[in-house]
Length: 421
Ligand code: ATP
Ligand code: MG
Image (spheres, rainbow, N blue to C red):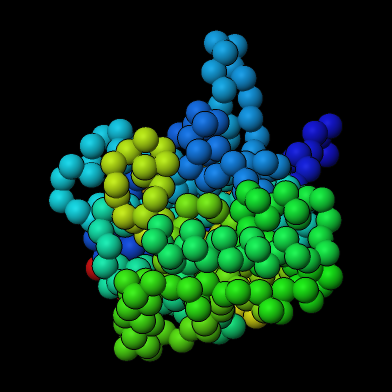
């Protein structure tokens, strides 16, 4: 062991488990790539102010969870705690919003939040996200929700539930906000929560404590304050989801952590994860662009958590059917065999076959152990006698069956066996 270990709240992804993470990222992003979303990558840090304005001064992310630093040059930077503000910043900076709308983008990467580490809650974690910028259309909200729901299903997850709500818009939300504040001011709450009533009263609805929840039973609900426009928009999103066979639960208490959400809000939860149950979430954020100095640009997006989705797979006992890391493992005995098989392995790889080689000059027995451990279907063994006979032994590692193949036909034969032509 080295003197160092990964910092608190972080962990390393190592084989073989790391393959699941890659597969989850692939399952999340493949449907996006098929749906007109282009890949975007932004820096791992931004000006702190982008997040304090874009995520919201009153959110947990900005008040408690950001990793901030002052550079030697005096810049105030923050490791990105989420993706939306950065992606919107990048799109505005490149004037993408002046072109055809909506601009549809997807991303995948690391995010950083200074949180209390626990199962499913880390200080460094991984998300795949999607944003559709510059269009107000219930079908766009529905598209994103369907893509996420299908992605979870494609992984074989059966216990992901979709919670859906509308947070209203700049017409009806302020009226509701005031009504909620009036109600909340009359409750018996601690100092911190009282402050929150003034800053971000909707977040109080999201308080997980039983003592708070008990007092909230009579609270006014956004649902009952939606203006006609928001009501009809939300109804259309619901109908479109139903028509695609995507089940959802109306959750009038769902507010989510970010200040910038309007109208459609949703969260995907998994019941096997304890209190860190949210595996992904998102919504419409019609006001965000203006909050960070851009033009009016109604938009919708989501971010799905890779780490928690892997935990959900484990909780459901789903094992992903991943292509084998190695299909053929070459075992040479002696110097000349090494040269011959090294060439064969190179050629197999060039033909698209996953091939590996017994390095380090280990003996036959150890080399065969490596072959078995690699998960390969075939071992390609070449010893002195084989060389004089001009053949290699192709051994099926599942059945143990073995037969000689002429050396100059090894690549063709292996490709044929693996259905590669
Ligand atoms: P939570 O309520 O659990 O704190 P959140 O509302 O802060 O979640 P979002 O900002 O919506 O989460 O991020 C989208 C997804 O990213 C979450 O649904 C979750 O799967 C994942 N995620 C968020 N924070 C963490 C974290 N600290 N560790 C691991 N995954 C996280
Ligand atoms: Mg959080």
